[in-house]
Image 1 (cartoon, one colour):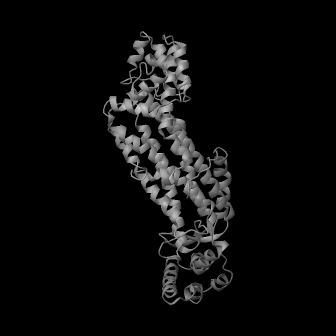
Image 2 (cartoon, rainbow, N blue to C red; image 1 turned 90 degrees about the vertical axis):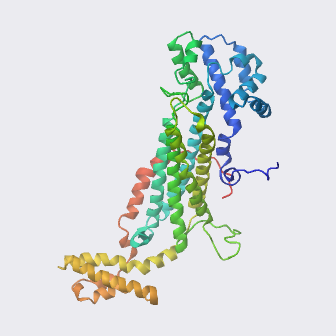
Image 3 (cartoon, rainbow, N blue to C red; image 1 turned 135 degrees about the vertical axis):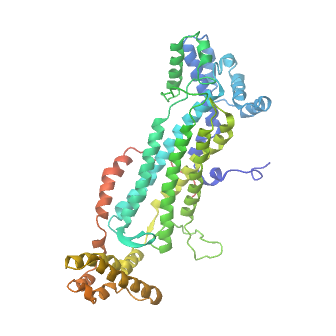
Length: 477
C-alpha cells in the first residue's frame, strides 16, 4: 500500500506539531523502554546482583540502535510487543541478554514510559498555553478601555471593553495553565512493582531483603528523572491518573472553544475578525466570503478533545482487581490523540489571538446605536432619587424601550428612547435631555479598564513569568 492507500490521522498530517508527534512516536517510546531497562540493570547491579559491568555498558552503547523491522518479526512470532523488543535489544547487546527485563513485567516499561511521555507532553502544553496568554495579554492591554457592547442572553447589555473581554478569555486559560502545572507536578512513576504490585519477583532476586527492593524502586526513578514513585499499585499505575490528565486537557479545549465561539459571533457582527491572508479563499463558491475557518477548526477539534476523557474515566472504573488488558488498545488511541488535538488547538488559538483584527469604527457604530438604552438605567436611578416609584418608572422605561427597539428594527429609525423619556411626565424633574446631549460610551464601562489592569498586574504577569515559550510550530494554520 502506498501512503495514499492507507488511513493516516489528520492530527498527524494537518494539525499537530512535530514536537508533540515526536513525543508520542515509536522511537521515543522504545527509546524510553531501553533506558528503563538500563536503569533497572544499573540499579540491580548497584544493589549487588551479579550483573557484569560490560552488560550494562553494551546496553548503553546500543540504546538508540533500534531495528524496528527485526522487532516486528519477533512480534509476529511472539504476539507480544514488549518481548519482541527485549529480544531485539538482546540482539545488539548479547552480553546483556540474560539480564534485560530481569524481575520486571511489561508494565514496568510501558507504564513508566507512558508517564515520562505524559510529563513531557504536559510541559509542551504548558508552554503553548504561555504563548496563548502572551497573545491575549497584548489584546487586553491594547484595548483595555475601548468600549464595546456586552451581551447577556446574546442580547445587548451594559457596555464592557474589548480588553476586558480578552481578559476574560485569558482567565480561562490561566485556570488551565494552573491545572496543567498541577497535574504535571503530581505525576509519580510506577517504579518496579512486579506482576500484581507486590514486588514479589524483586524480593526473590534480593533474597528477601525488603530494604533493597524498596531502594531499587527509588533508584530506578532517580535514574530516569522522575524521582517520586507511587507508594502502592496493582500491576499498572492507577488509571485514574489518565482520567485526571485528560480532564485537564479537556479544560484547555473548553477555554479554546469559548474563545473561538466568541470570535465567530464577533466576526458575524463585523467587530472583531480572525486573521485572513492576502490570497486566502473563504468559499469555493462565494468569493466574497471571509469565513472564520480557524475558529471553526478550534471548535471542531475542541469538541473532539472534550469527549475523550470519557474513555479514560471508563477505563479507571473498569480496572478489575490488579489489572485487566481492556485498557491497552484504548490508551494507545486516547492518550496521544488527546495531546495532539490540544497541541493543534493551542497553535490555532495563538495564531488567531496574535492576528485579531479589531474594527473600532464598527464597534463604535454598534455602541452608538444601543447606548441610549444603556442610559435608561441611569435615568431610572435618577428618577428614584427625585422621588419616583422605582417599579412604576421601570415600567415606563420598559414600554418606551420596547417600542423604540421595534421601530428601529422595522423602520430603521434612530434610537430616541431618551427623548421619549424626557417628554414622559413620569420623569419630570430628571435631566434626561441633558444626559442625551452628553452621552459618552466611556461613562458606561464601569471599572472594566481598571479590572484589566489589575488582572494583568496581579494574575497574568506573575504566571507568564513562570511559563516558557513553546518551540516554533511548522503547522500551517
